[in-house]
Image 1 (cartoon, chains in turn purple, brown):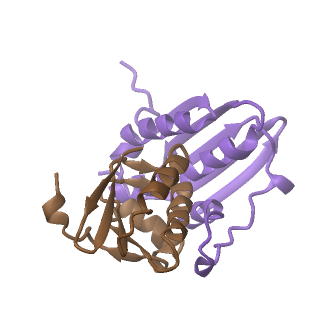
Image 2 (cartoon, helix red, strand yellow):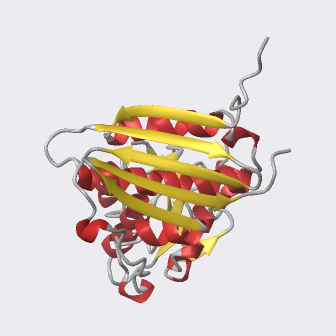
Image 3 (cartoon, rainbow over the protein chains, first blue to last red):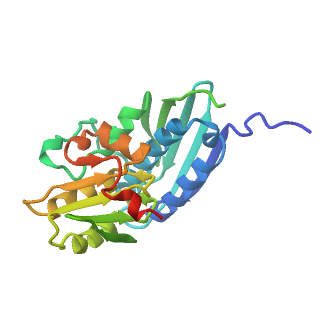
Length: 145
Length: 111
């Protein structure tokens, strides 16, 4: 029997851009390989980053009715790569906003999302490809046990 | 959105019985807490020991609740689990709240 070289190292999910679908997708993502093989702290890091990126799409990309989100995560040697594709509105100025941390002394209720993504990733790229937004994120993680 | 109210000596403890405070639930959480914090207790403690995940929406909602407890009280947090503690620490919002390892009288109210 031929082994699938990507088995356990890659996971792809396609789902509508709604809050509940994001919840369900993230639960599935963290419960299965490759994420489930990682130390808890790394699963948590990926979860935070993915949720924030997906929330942005739900909130901003599809103002009329939810389109799809195509999410793929892949485990490399010491890193997890996340690729998120949607066909909604492009990011303003075609790039992620500056990850400025809101001043905590002003009791901010928002503006944390991109900062969290930036804090927990080592690489981030965004490109607009035809009608698609492609966001790629890389996180350094410990080797799976 | 289930939040249990537990009366402590001088504190009202609001224990969140959901495992996530995220975009899908943040508004309901705020609405429920708006009712709960009308309790005149001098202290309000939000017990998050059952919550394994808070995203930026959830964080924002918790800050909003802080503003709802009124000028004379400060919202206290208890039982932050690792991922939740990390989000508070990374955003420096851990400096805005009094944070306890567990809710006051926690052992008595377990289960």
